[in-house]
Image 1: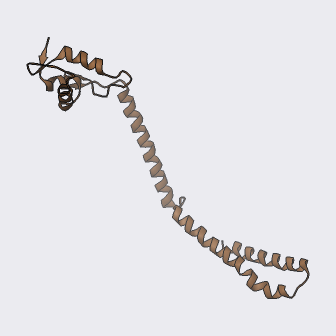
Image 2 (image 1 turned 60 degrees about the horizontal axis):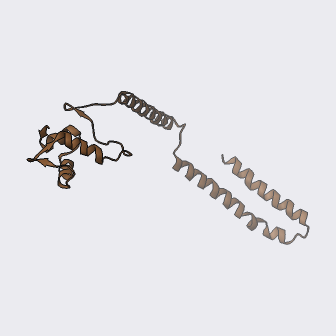
Image 3 (image 1 turned 90 degrees about the horizontal axis):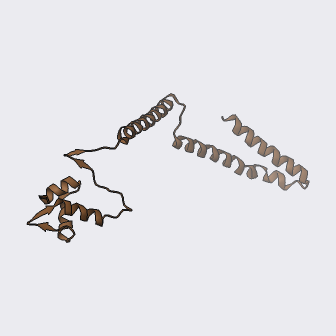
Length: 161
């Protein structure tokens, strides 16, 4: 029966002194003359632990953290991913500086301006041809005039590029 201080038992188990104090105050871990019986406390701790939940506390052995074998691999994968992302950002920056990439806002503004020109050109057709069409009774002639006006507006827009 090894009796140790609460803080030492908490340190050996890998959790805080506050958590050990909570276990003691709730009556889950008994004290013997103000000290913790390590074997009994560990047995009680194992019995109250939910086996469906992973152990979240760090594993300590003589004040040294034991890392799993996966840590160097995990660090390497993280570093590789970080370098790949950094490379992508650098590539985008270079393309932006040489003019291969254009900001989305500039594209939106250009498309809005072009759309406005198209809209204005088409909306002006009725004003230009209404008086001419009012005097014509032949449907094929009206169709021909409207088609020519629309074609003229679209041709004019294609020259602006």
